[in-house]
Amino acid sequence: MQGRMSLKSRIERVMLLFSFFVVGSLSAGAGTLMILALTPFVKYLKKYIWRDEVVRITLYLFLVTAFFSFFSTFFTDPFEYVSEILKQLSWIVLAIISLKMSGRENTLFFKIFLVSIVLCLPLVVLLPIRFQAYFPHANHLAYYCLLPLVYFLLTTTGLTRRLWVAFLLIIVVVTKSSGGLATFMMTILLFYIIDKKISLKLILQLGSSVALLLLVAHLSGALDAFIDKVTVVDFEKISKKADRYSFGSDGSLVWRMTYWLAIFREFSENSGTMQLFFGEGLKTLSHGNYIYSFMVNDPHNDYLRLLVERGIVGAIVYVCFLIKLCLVARQKYLFLLILFVPMFFGNVIVSFPYVFTFIFLISYFNKSHKSINHGE
Image (tube, rainbow, N blue to C red; front, side, top):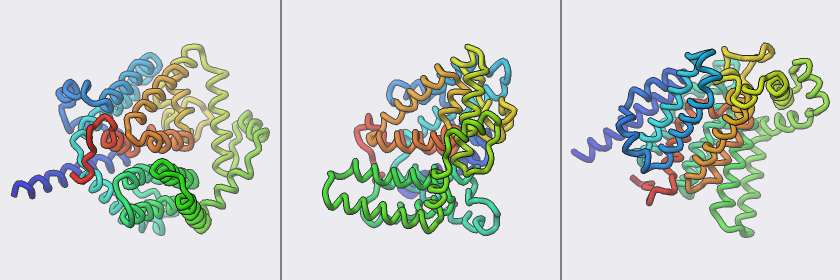
């Protein structure tokens, strides 16, 4: 009976966290408040701050955000400042909660995630947009799949591993995200390069995997879309279009590069010294708070977002702590890849579901832990 109750408690805990995950995907503010209400984190923070590096680094990320953005945001938009600070605070809570998560609970979480995505698949034919399930954008879902991908690559073997990878690959293909698919392929290749010694057999396996993934990309249209995006890049034309704030319809890559350049020029040429060093303020590149009149979308580039919102100093310090967070994991190169590559093409550091799960995985694969109980 005790074992059954223990299993029941685990299932209930995972279901509760998954409900927070879904709510946070739909509304980051609601998800943040639900997490903060889950535990009296101050009591546990004192207990774990010197014992766990992930908790300590999330605390540093919170302090960096609170300090460097205080003068640029609090007096101009206190609501946005407080909402962002609360979200950063919720990541500390998650880091503490994740210390109690076992391998079985993580696996159950991702199984529930996959089932929820399957239940949303009818939306592919019902809605005239790219498949995104309950995520804010199709690219968010595609990049999120990198997290369960790394988890199953590291905790499963043989046919089980191949099946999980196949399921996740199907989701990424359905989203039609060329960037997501490219990063998915890079993650698999990096894993096999790190996991095994280079040999003829490995080279053949990697070659076969690349060929298969390219075939899938071709059949889905993602490969052709990616090639079209690259071939139309003209840097001189992009520079002129950015001067006119004419972003056009020359493909998403050209659109993004033009948009990035226009935002960067506006920030670097028209900001004061304080803004250059400490930023224009939190969420000034987020929907509803755009600081530049020509903006129509988020930048889809977290490096640019950090630079404009937090300034040169704030951005550098924040990125350094993100790197430090990745280095906590035993498989640091995989975590560096799945964080810093998507940051270039997406909005992952402001994606509630992405950061939510990233913290759990970093804590689970924390190299300072003496053992990782995959089978617990």
